[in-house]
Image (tube, rainbow, N blue to C red; front, top):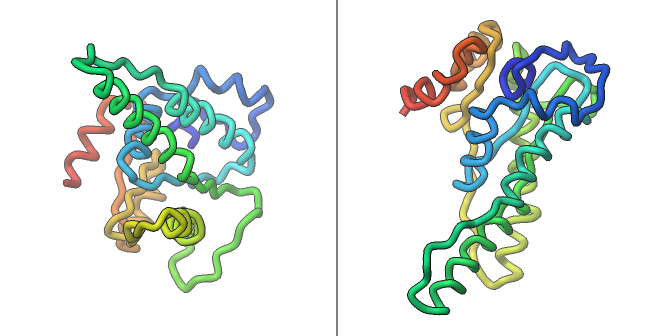
Length: 200
C-alpha cells in the first residue's frame, strides 16, 4: 500500500484524515485496480500497516470512481442501441458491487491457519485468497443459482497470483514460495505496466 498504491510512506501511523491521502493515490494503481475489477480479476491489499481503515478509505475512493464513472455513449442508430449500451454499463457497475477487496494488514484482525510460508507477505496473501474463495462461493455462486444460471468457477493459485511490492525482501519471499511477483520502483511508476506485461 505505502509507496505503491499511494506515493508516500505512512509508516502505519498516518496522523491526518484518511481523505487527505486521496491526492497521493498513484494514477497507475487507480487505473490498474479499476481495470482488474472490470475484467473479473480479483484484487487484494496486503500491507504491514495496522491502519486498515485508512487503506479501506483509499480503496473506496478508487472503486467508488469506478462505480460513478460517466459512460459516454456513441450516437445511437436506434433507441434500442441506447438501451443496450446503458444495460451494458449497468451490468459492469453491478459486477463491481459483487466483488470484495480483502485487506490484510498489521491490525491483528485476521489469522492464517494454513501450512504455507509465513515469510514476507505470504501469509497475508494466503488469508486474502481464503476470503476471496469464500466470497465467491457464498455470494457469486449463490447469486447465479438464484437467477437460475451457473457461476463461473474461481481458482486462485500461486501461479495465478501476482504480488506487486516496493520491498525487494517481500518480492524475494514470494518468488521463493512460488508466487509470481513484480518489484515496483517508486521512482519509476510508469514502468509498472511494462513490468507486468513481461510476465505474460
